[in-house]
Length: 196
Image: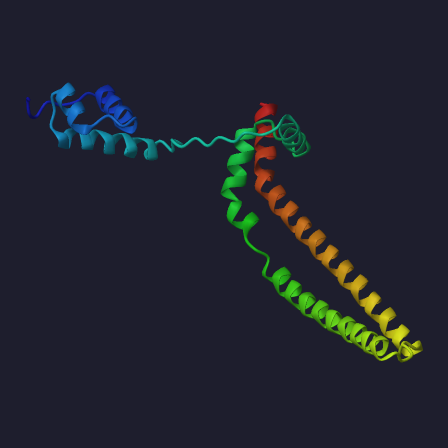
């Protein structure tokens, strides 16, 4: 095997592609008549070149239904965006903001959970009193005040349900704003590209 042979740019890129496909470095060194170090340098060079060019070497794939794709296209159209790939790239770059858990919502859900536990305890106490009276053959201790307690519990449960719904609506509005912000630059760029 000859040493010191200089690889052309095309040979370096070919070596890098073949290494990426799993061809052994020793096999490539023998085929191109260079050292193993030259093969590894060619791979590194190709990687550095991609980075320097701002190249995007990774491809992701996703299977979707026709309905899902049509909904995506409709959403992009509403934002004035023509290219799915640009929109997905923008959303990927904004993923940290979009996917970050909402700490305030988590705290509020904990508080609502505690309130629901209190409601559950109250309902259990009422049920226990009614069962005890029934087992003893006594008149049920269900009077106007018990009825008022049940009414108050029902109001509390409905209030909690309304609060939870509003929290989810607020979270959705916040996510919509973040997505709109992530896609806003694209719509502006495509509009200005189309006017030229």
